[in-house]
Image (cartoon, rainbow, N blue to C red; front, side, top):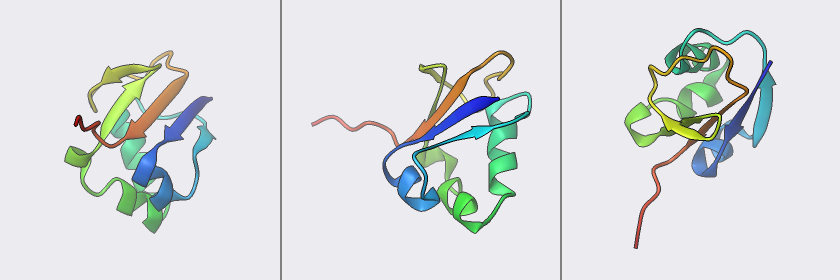
Length: 82
């Protein structure tokens, strides 16, 4: 089991701040594909991956990052400075 966290507009589109997911794929991209296949709101949230960042166990990662042993994956928009 793994926690998947959603922040900012990702959370708004999906309608959940967090959920537990069983048996995700080998990489973050596999997880994204699994989530997209669920229903339209997930498809909308993950439609443009260039507008998303991902962290695996609170470490900034890429979509090809492995998920073996991971306990948490978080999706959020890029942080903007100002």
